[in-house]
Image (tube, rainbow, N blue to C red):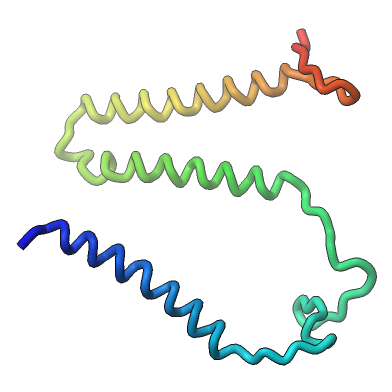
Length: 128
């Protein structure tokens, strides 16, 4: 038997389950909208004024930083699992990897801080 059949079966089941769940929810959901159901609901408190607020970009930057470190963990986890069997060379290699990533991140951040942008024309220039 071809081992790729299991991979294809995994993908087919992985597509059928979410599509089926979304389709069933759409078919079984009540479809009687009224003005009360269409209002914004947050934590049981009636909204007043405009419901739309603009969030600071810092929340999104925090999420992106989390994502970057999460991806780094994907690379470091196999190394950490086999650390005992790999020896001193692997420890030094891992330390160099971590320090290199930290240096690149710091250099990029420092470069962005040295750049400034003219608001009216959008031209970037260096702050020296």
